[in-house]
Image (cartoon, rainbow, N blue to C red; front, side, top):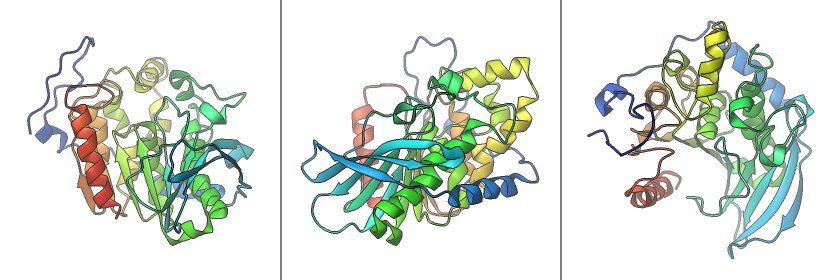
Length: 319
């Protein structure tokens, strides 16, 4: 597979010198000995939270879907906002938790690749409808919040907000989703999904699109225009932060991921360096399908066609 050579004005090559074959050889870094125990402890704390979800129906622009604003409680008593969609007719046969990118979200995605699904669209703490007085919403500041300690680093709370506690909330709001629950996440949501899914047996399968937070030791050497650049700058002044980041490496977590996964890493990406994306995808231990994107976080002439083919493939995967 040829590596795309798109015209760009970045001060670096968004391919980072890697072709497809080289990307496929990347692996996850060595994780701390207590990596699994740390994440299992976080999961247990999140599952002990009473989500106390509330919902309010609002106008839906989609004729076949009902739309609700929702709120629920996550770890640290954070109140998380988001949206919920339900099919307007017919039974709910499954649920899906949908993560978001670091740009946040201003509504629900009304064109998911599965039928008769109830879908929850949570916003991570500090972002969009989950604005927080202490957690900054700007990606370059959000990604550094609490980074001095694995116990306080914001990504642990985000895993609870947008995966574990969101799952608990949709199960309470729509009990039919107990029959089957899936996950979809892009960029930030892809990385959080890789970190959180291995430890929650409620999920049947998942999709990660251009996932971030993979292979931090390598990622710290790669310039980008995404949140990773803020971590790179922080690391220059505080190299000890790598000891915290090792607990939040999505590639290390992916080694524990055994449910069927549909993965969409990109060959060219100025925001989430492809070596980190492929480190996650390569490390996944279970059954996986891989749809390689020409580019992530970048518009190109073939993007519309690529997005359409991806949607068709996802529909088949989630049948």
